[in-house]
Image (cartoon, rainbow, N blue to C red; front, side, top):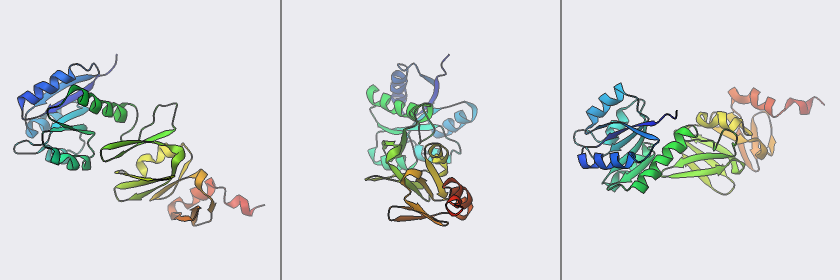
Amino acid sequence: METKVQCLIVDDEPLAIELLKLHLSKLSSIEIAGAVEDAVDAIDFLNTHKVDLMFLDIHMPEMKGTELLRSLKNPPAVIFTTAYRQYALEGYDLNVLDYLVKPISFGRLTQAVEKYFAYHIQGRSKFLREAEKSEEFLYLQERSFIHKIPLIEIVYAESMGDNLTFYLNNREITSRCTVSSVEEFLSRNGFLRIHRSYIVSLKRITSFGPVSVFIGQKELPIGKTYRKNVLDQLNYKAFFNK
């Protein structure tokens, strides 16, 4: 039997709750686990129930939805719902799945739900495989956009704090994540972690030495803790034992 996605609706407007319930009742893959009208009740509900996806109003009395989300250590996936467009940027900074402006249409809601399935059913967090048998693409979120990136286009990725910039053939994409969160997937597909801040495509390395690799004219350092593994992977010593 297919397991349904358990969702929680948090909104201080009863009519908004009823509209979401009506829309969600049409989706066989979704089950409404509960609906509450303020952040305090939402916290209590989350502490006692399994919730996969939360539809969260932003503009609520006492505690805004953004404040509630920041207070949660392990929040479920979140889709913001609000009548105030000015909160959109803050919402995406919190890595929510989507941002729905009231009144919410059924079509727009289904698009948001599809993002949940793309992220959490088909793959891991923000970095997804299209399918277990096909690992040709990486999905990246950049603010409100989801980019489907062919792995063959990725030259290397560089970590800068909580952000990871992917350098592609002719563009750059920055997503809020770390090298470690994509390392396992990329390592299976022709990439090598050479430094705490860098992971590179093996196919793009044009030359290398004991402390750095070159991708064309771009020199990238090999970190001390990664050096042995990198040089082994590149078979560096074999060139001097002939």
